[in-house]
Length: 598
Image (cartoon, rainbow, N blue to C red; front, side, top):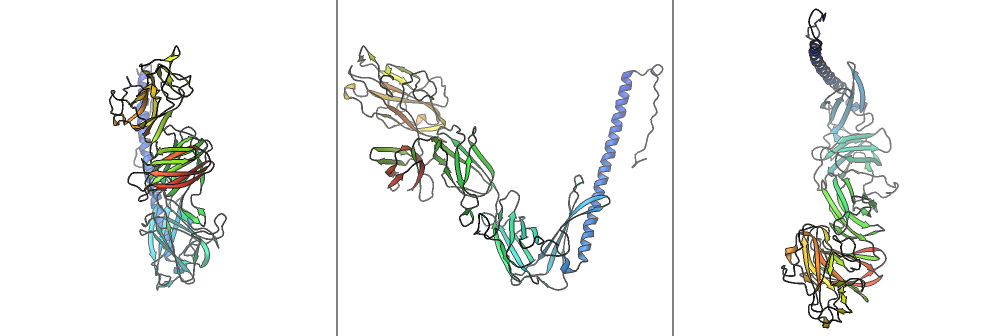
């Protein structure tokens, strides 16, 4: 019998000719035997594992108690770590074997009850931690106790470090790991954790000037540390390696907090992903004179998804600057610089356009709160140039129809969907009436229906515009007019064209008229142009059509001017309820930005 299990001896003699057992019965009998045997073996091994685990735990408890007894019998001055603070004769980590099982024994020794008026300690806290790396499902055995001297003890020829660890909001961080390493000798080092008040006090530290490297960490948190004076790349650190003076307390504080996730996407104004966009990003925190903790880093978004992401970002305020040679940044949402808070998920969107000469990005902010101001009119002008845009609004426009009809979705800027009675080829880049026998047909309406424009997301539409604003008088009043249609789908059963009042009975006859709100909330849009003349020798003409909209991919409070000749411009910003801004701005080469506060 083994562990209470009876042993059985099985005898089997089969004579298939006499017993009458079939082959199937033999197979079934064998299967039943195997099931019983395996169940018995499983129960046996489980009991063995429980027995072994219980034995290992018992040995570990005895080992921890043994180490405590050894420490209690040492002279008080010897209770310390051979390579730590306070210094003594005990190894910080050792491997000991008991009962054929190898255990790892870790020791922590700490002077406690620091008096800030004088560097004194009345007790030492000792923690014994026993682990078994080779044992399955083994929980560490931890014993903690205090060792006290007969009388009040002084740190002698040493000082003390009082280390305070707070989070981004000044609250204490308990359980932060603090590593203190002497640069004067590798034999003096200390690794411990902060208490519930975020404080770690280390007493009995040998004195030295700027010789103690302190690194503060915690899982899932940022890292903070000291740096050597005169070190490479950071010769004048803001937090130099610490100094400890004899019989004095050195107070030093650190700030760490939970890491955050940051995703930066590069998209077009219609929310399409644009990959391989280069930019730089820099934080505001410094670790020394002119040395940033998160320095200006060249970053490129993914070539297919247009994304860059990091889940280990420290809280800070970051600024983004475009460095791409193919694209201009037409907007940043949220505005740059942007704040990244601890334990947060932040998405930043770069709206990009193909480069077109020199460009100026204008950002309009509320001076009271720093928020972007949408709907502000921004005018940039100088001799021979005058352009006006509205912050927070995107524009879709078409100025060429010479490619002909038949294009459903707007992709080729020189094509449209369908036309009747119009000529888009004779006058390049313009729409005019078609001629019949050398004359224009009078009192008949020609039409041109655009391709479908995709704004990228659900959008609101604002104004409808075209040029030229005036037509030949002989063509008659209302010789050019438009209607506008929108839809949540790119392929609706029908496009319902409406005018400024939101019904099919009205028409846009004045450029810049507002688009009715019945069109809001849709992603796709088309326009219908109507032309007619009262004079057979005169035709109206359309050279440009555009409409303004807002969507999730149009950054608020920003506009970009591209294709600018270098020179000095007058920049004027207007917004109802705010003071008007007007000043000169010099445009040089490449991309630049100007921030205006109203």
